[in-house]
Image: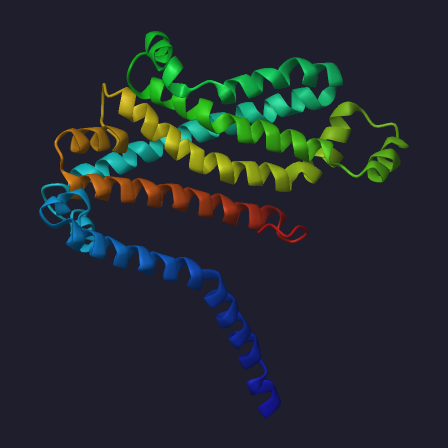
Length: 271
């Protein structure tokens, strides 16, 4: 009876050690960065406004004069990010499936995916404004362009990484292309697809903020606030907006990591 009661203790200790190993290093680095911020603020003297103290930045998230504006902007940026991410996932997966169906399709389409990734977004920002306006739609377009390539490349890699012996065994049954795609290629590609989603999730937040920075017509998001606070030298509000944007990117990244573990974690080590 005593053995049964004490058996779970080693398992709990292993979980505690695993949790400490996972969260200890990032939390320790965060503490060092906070300490460095305080030291830098003190060292700057009269120019300390360039690097405000961390607690003053955090307090701006609850300050009645700035908090409502920041939290409202966070919601708007989240909507743009998730909308652009959903479109990027749909286009990226479809694009990769088309390239996987034939070598000539991959040779024809993949260079354009690379070109889309390589074009500086600042160079085509005026064109996006001309074509899509200067509000929500233009922001989403920028978000899609920035987040699209990881979905295309990761999905294509996953579709092409099916084990050769499994494919040959599968082809003995004479299946159609759609059957091979649905029952062999797509299941094998799921880990790569979810890895692409995690990368694109972070890039979607970047794209949303970049889009809001340049297309400020309509309701302001975090990018618009960052631009406004920077122009007015409101350093505490500026750092608070950047902090919230960073946490949004981390949150979306972790959500898609959790979804990946739920979807493929039982048969694939999705770290």
